[in-house]
Image (cartoon, rainbow, N blue to C red):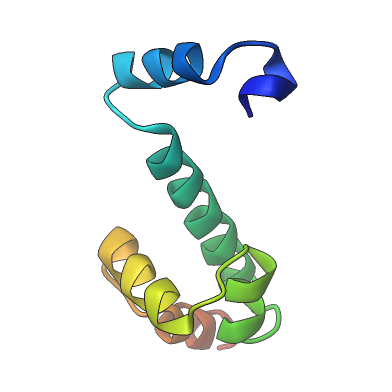
Length: 82
């Protein structure tokens, strides 16, 4: 990310820290939000959403998803299909 916008990694970290978040945490949140959007649109499966957002561990994805949204990914998908 830093190279793409032309700043050092340290400078990027400082900018995010000023907003109270780390770069890795921000990236995780964005990936989870993308997965939530895919699931709430009823596209594919939970595994498809996790993989398309870069999660290689289904267990980690499930844990992170529930911690972020307070719901299981499967619940979001099922609600979208009804």
